[in-house]
Length: 355
Ligand code: MRU
Image (tube, rainbow, N blue to C red; front, side, top):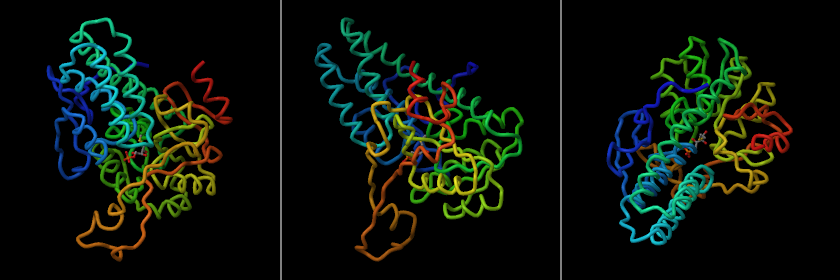
């Protein structure tokens, strides 16, 4: 099951040819404008991740790998100890931009331990190898998504209605995406699905990004407000729920965009299978349960004023804006990974992925 073609520049984060520059498609400007930005400093990367210009767990993981290469290449380090100390500090700084998705820290650590394995080489050779490594990780993620697509396709039939929340498409997860992977691969093969995309308050990733990606691809997609999911399920229009994930704990609990756990409760009520799809880089076996996942709190203005001409709430009203919630493993039918479909009991079966 290999992907035939790698055009890394089709994705939302990639390296500029022959230069230590990471290019990102600014997701905050979509769907209206396709704006590419060039990142070269630790501050550039931090800001792009924090503001969600590049977002989605796997995409920020791969972007973090590119960041480690770009920063190493521009560092003019005197020796390996100097390079490693400064790169380690930059990595910690980047990790602090967003705490919930494990892929960010994963990407930084992968690249640091790769650099460590080359400590005896001259700095230019280490830097060149880091460039190759970061692009290899990007290609690996495309392969993983392809495998997720194949596994996911076994769970649905032609004509099924699939509901998704937030955006776990190519913008968030690189080519094919994760939650969208079976849908997009199925579409390539002529298998029709009807997709319902939750708009996903407060930052509207479903409306701005998932609906954009799927309609650009020619998939039958219908946008709904988050509070319409129950009605759509009750109408019998949904045969499966596919969502992404930002961190999967060892017991199968997982963090995903705020609102996901509510969708899971609804799916359980209506007897609809509920799947999360993600690469093994999103599984955190060092995190025992969902209670151990740090949930990012974001600026209340994302709820109160960001999308409106004038504020839509009284000035000074208390506001709570968690960016993610944790779906309890008891609500999850299966976890679809690049290494196979994992069914309960998740604490036993997730471990087997690593044997
Ligand atoms: O805050 P975001 O937009 O970076 O949130 C991440 C997500 O897009 C979702 O939670 C997604 O479903 C998982 S990322 C594959």
